[in-house]
Length: 585
Image 1: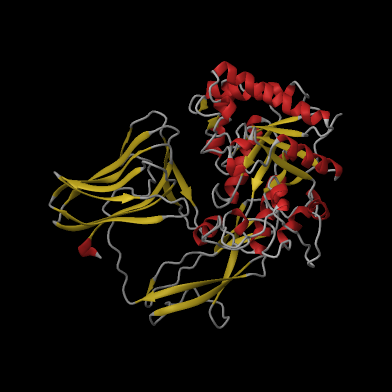
Image 2: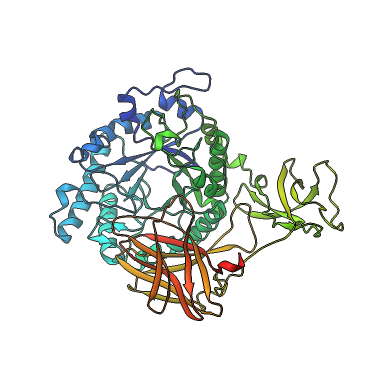
């Protein structure tokens, strides 16, 4: 039977639902009335469901046996009975598969490469035939889950695109043997939805290696991990145009509260740029839906919220702590109302967020130099400049021609932005003197690229990229970060030599962010002659951390400073390198 695409997919992944219901979860509507899960979802506009399937989850005790074929068939019946579309996510693993792990099923561990391809083909085909026999064939299937780093490790691990593509093609052929594109749409799913440079590289190389025809591009986009909303717009716009495929965001989410035990703490909330509140959670969903819907020619097909039906449980933390669409009583949160979106309800010309400027400290009597325009994020993900009128604490319009504040202290001012009833509040610190030590490093923001720096890579596949970051409140010019990553064990070093003129103590600083794992060695160092001083960096993905090498005793002559990495596959971001003379502070 021909299944045409929906105008816009408003989906959710509820793969955990059978387990949570078995554990006694009860869901309630806004008024507190208990409600059946599918009834609630359909009431608020959800029209598509995504389920994952694991090969033999019983081989992994942590899975508790869920997400097997029998349970998938039962869930699929409910999906079809409620008139919703069904996306099946093949993990090709007995448990989780994601960019960090694509572990082969236990039954496939001893197979040769040719036998592994046959296993992928047969398993895909036989699973879909079993679903079809029950009248619950999916409308879409994913050949793998977040396979940006490869597929079925180690056989299909990148950078070996050719072997990875052979394995993916085996899955595609297995699916195509059950239904053509009119009956069964095939999706390729990667993470990093807001990072076009990752996605373009993957698809370009995979297609060059013979990736068979597929129908859809699926992406994960979490604003606290995968770039800004503007990054998302740029990424999916370019990707869909270049590869001529529709795009769905098949995983997205945001927190309804901050939690040290959940997935968004205060630092991640800042990275996302949207508060971790029920209102902020809805804003993220509204933004992602509008951004996807804004693609030309309706190439943005929709979104799926990853695992909304979960309730916080005392002492357990994790995703359910603050990432679902249910509060501690199981009552639905206002984010569910985002699924009432239609293309006819688009909000592309509405303001989503106004970025307040970060104002520098002023000296007493210094003339005010406030921006005449502020940056505004629109609901379609675009950035615009809007005029602002600045008011003092008494509501009087500030005069840009005056001589500024005459007394030291902290002053509050407000900005009225055209086209918005929202006021932007900022503070100005007025000082009697400004002290700023000179940074002795050349081009510490990499505005000229890496010309002023020496870079040494131990492996060819080590990727080094300068990434501008427009931090809230959106400074200009951007703060550049240097991103380093590899999909294999690697070494890397970036360094600069400085001619020290004055003997004395110097401080070396850098901000670092990234992933960590066993045997990661990252060091910030300064060395002169046979003297070396260093600080070990323990990267965190949850935000920037300032690391310092203090009290470098230097004589006149050459000082070498930098960062060295010897590590398994990770990524690291560094920025704001700074070398200062302690006497200048």
